[in-house]
Length: 286
Image (cartoon, rainbow, N blue to C red; front, side, top):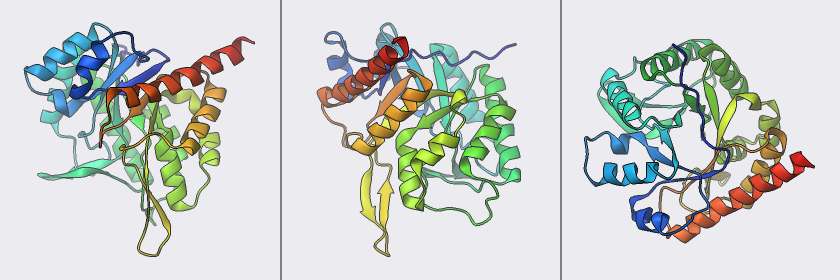
């Protein structure tokens, strides 16, 4: 059986927060899809599901997982995967995505998306985990590039090569988080434009944007944190525009998960996405 392909509309989306429910329904909004974190909707019912059913009547749905631990050295949690399947069967989202990271070991769960070494052994394990997820869900999975703060000495390939080979071997799509590219490049003294030039954009089926916090490490060097607690930085917007100029319009989500503002602030970010995508369409039609 063929996998259900990711099919979000090529427009702006937002991560849904319950406090915005009334405002979203109060008139036309500059969004074409909403995203939820899968783990927040694994219960059987209640207000979260009532709200989600209403929103799904108006907007396409993206389900974004944060707990599968795709990069774990251990087998995937089959019970968690079964709960995820029930959620996807219930709502039939237009897209499902997860992170290139790990967050669990044994019975311990860490509230972080932790990095992994880019080696052949890791590659084989991640491809196997993605194959299990896609086979179980019977739908394509999009894999998101991480924001990283450390690099592993044992890594034997660059991140873009690692992602490209996973996409080909696992038959999955990629979710390009432009803010994560910027954060990781700045933290490691790399070039974000070079990363994007080498990334196989033909596999990218969704884009994420979000804000980051600027700090310093113990040695006084700049350290960016993928905080999702503020507007998208100007430098990230510029990177995003250069990506869209190459790819054409893509589904683009604005993430704002901490210090969540009033709906109008999030809608303004979605409106900026809409404007960039509209310019890209005009340029391609010219």
